[in-house]
Length: 425
Image (cartoon, rainbow, N blue to C red; front, side, top):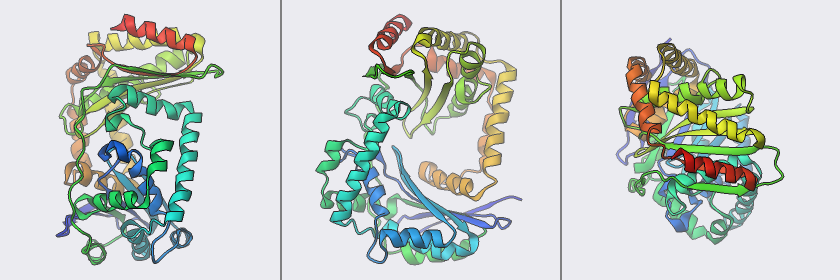
């Protein structure tokens, strides 16, 4: 059965999308603030993530414990996340619980207390989170490759969590300022998917959010041309070395994004990809290897991650280089292309069978495109992409041999990748 999407915008700029799925027993709700780590000034480093944490710490009407108990008492669970260009809060519950669920979500989105004592306590929680990330090479590598790609002075190059020093500098007034500026009508998107009625949802959203100040759309520093720097953290006692490579890609609105997405699938997104088959299955060089397609409003990347024994690093880098060179020289086969198309479209359609994915799709459409996009439009664009377009994408990404890199491991491994970088350019 098909889903029906409707939209509504309040006078203060709050945008709402509902996806009616009458055959479902659940409802998924998302509240999105169009403000993330890339909207921060240097003095606010980590503030978007801290605000996300503080929204869970209570309102004048509900303590943190009451928020959790009321949400879970509806048969639901709630979560939130902060990324570079937005912050989101989402929950899923039985459809008949929508009204109560939305009341709780709206309360903590609109009315966080930001109690000074809770603020200091939550800072300590994030200090522990920062320490945990640094203790997990696969996660810390993400911070290192971002810094190598964008530089530490650009918001995209700074960690989302902030630093211990930046956290310690934040006072309650700083947090309130950032919250009030960011969580306004102009930056707010609400998406609801499931067994719901659009008019009833619109009425409840309007009643609660009509009084939200319109504010101003969040601005951000324009992306720079990706750098070709390298970052290294020495972990001499590790059994594995962790490596990331970052290549320039295309922005979220670029018509070439479908070709770049297909290129990424063929390169390393799944188990039939070239990287997985060559490095892991055929040569046994690693256990974990993948590539990611990353896109923002004004820029994009294709990134490769691999974790392996240091003794295999040279062979792995040479194999990655051979795969990139072959994609530039020869493009992709029709068999690879059709398999990648089937994978993207099939995974998308399977995902959109559930209310959570429909909620996420609708919310991201309003955030990124200010309109709803039929998923079948994207599917058709993928299906229409030619082998020549994917070959062109490969040349755009790899031909100039301009890339950033990061490594966590021994000095010996770092010397090896530095030499490889010099020879690869």
